[in-house]
Length: 294
Image (cartoon, rainbow, N blue to C red; front, side):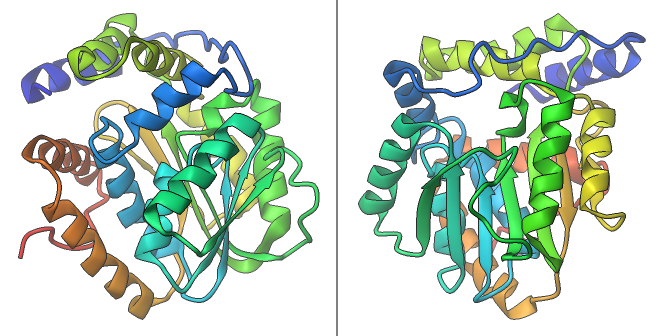
């Protein structure tokens, strides 16, 4: 990705005075086999989402308690969750998703990678039916909240998440933020079009159009407590992180060692993409939790 062009688009987006109207996803549940497969492939080891997933897993580690129990809202094909679970092998994870097709792929992902500390459950993140109050040490979600149809549904999901969280539980919710210019969306979606399937390209555009605004995400986060902090990419909210840290230094140290090894095993282009995202957050005050270089 061209850094100067990215800066130009983010700056122009920041200077645009009017918000763009949100366009909810065409389908609440991603269940069409071809669409599901395209999304799953994008997060595989050589997919365009892999560096984003590793970056988010590194930042999420501050909200994970060693030996605790963590719920992933809308886990999808488990590319992100399996990465997090491998960084934290002594933590129990529960992956929740509405889609049978996604959960089938998630089982395949976990089996293929030998991940044994994840249990999959079909369910709705808006209600979290079947989960007891205060039954989780952490709640986690990445690139999934924009699938919710309305702001009310988003707030319902965060209220339900707060219900199942223990009082001192960790929180890590990350998603796209709503950008203002169609030209910015076009740039982001098409910058690597030659490296991604047409179905993924269309799904990426749908996701950016369906993103909630920063204000809407912060409104929903109030259900989780005043100590949940908001982190936003510099200049414009290409990505937003809502996070409550917990104190568990031994767990983070082990996870960061594993994350560093995963980074070093990446291709050069994936390393550059991860560092570019890290720079956008660092410029707004959220540094990487450790150095990725030996």
